[in-house]
Length: 267
Image 1: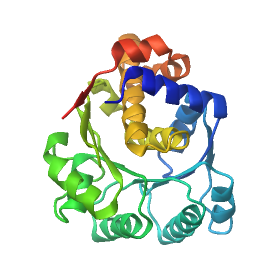
Image 2 (image 1 turned 60 degrees about the horizontal axis):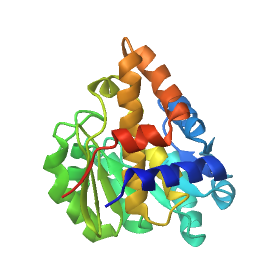
Image 3 (image 1 turned 60 degrees about the vertical axis):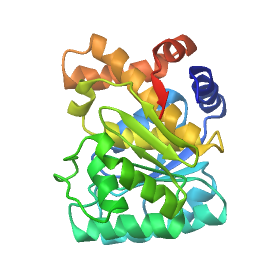
């Protein structure tokens, strides 16, 4: 089982190596995602122009693809970036935002995960169900299901794609070749801050950039997200201050914070 000491080791590697994380992500979360990556010690770049994505991926340590504000032009950029990442054996992390909401969005997500074998797929329960079971609906980009309801769909996605699948919710589940892991850190106020799910995906990219064990990377990223959320909620008075304190807690996080607070269970 992944321990708090393991997570701290990988967190420290992010801080020491400052890996460049190439994000093709949505307009809503660019600022939050970039600031969170900076707070943990990674180096974010947000580049989606088709003319430069292949070159940008070439100097990155991980590629994060988030389909939140989808368009035809961005799909071409995502495909071109993923092709280069595959050529260079750079880990790809996919966030299928809103999969199940529209046929176009679902099809793009399916094509990305089936064609490019991502290292990690992170989504909410409804998104994972729509991809793993090829059914289900989302409420826009929000989930209509609790996270445990997506475990069967997640297992199918693992078998189908070879990816580690992370289902985020009140309890985060990470499903990989070794089995299922529950991460029970977090706070309800996190759901009132837009983009924290997308931020979790970006942190998965940062952790995947420093360890080839992508199951461990996803567990570590989700635990650090949840711990930062718990610590921030102690100080926050609402969503606005929650976002501010969340970034500060990521930046200030120590080994003791992780080891003492982490709640991980192998299933």
